[in-house]
Length: 277
Image (cartoon, rainbow, N blue to C red; front, side):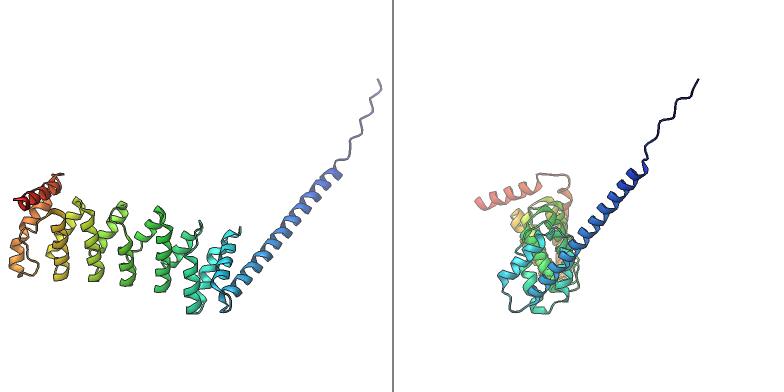
């Protein structure tokens, strides 16, 4: 039998070469596009830097620049603005940081996180103001996380803006600040505890009746009286011996509050009945 002649195989190599060339061309095109994007970004940031730094560019135009940065697709906006503000002269630093707090973009939280850990007190305060304006759960959580700020003015700003009717994180932060080494901060925190009007605040305030500072003791008993309607004849200005005797009733009530969920209500009702008589 004669062998059938083998079918001639098509040469596939040119196809592979063509496909390979197409991939190469595509990759080169992507690389060129990336280079173009980087060039565009560089141009965007260079222009923004010039305008934001200029004393001759007004606030409205600078605000437009900031909007353009946050509306762009680049991921470099937050680090650029943070480094720009840190390096800027004080007047420009204050102006741009203040303008930024007028914006509301998803990337703002990330920028404010950088602000509140910066060594500059001004930047940390600007970060706090921005977070307060955002008024989101995440923003409030970030504020509460900054209660160990080294500057008492920043801590006072924080405690003034923590919500007494807010989250557990807010309540815990307020209680922590009631122990602040700065009396002005601690007193604001004690007032916030008084507004909470719950068992947690009651126990915390009662413990402050033993504080060494007369101002802290006064603030604590004032809030307790507003909360339950009585001061149990406690005198914040009495001698140590007298105060130790007077505080025993408060200690008993504080312990009782852990098991008696109606204690505060009953104390208030008792006080109202006495007043009525």
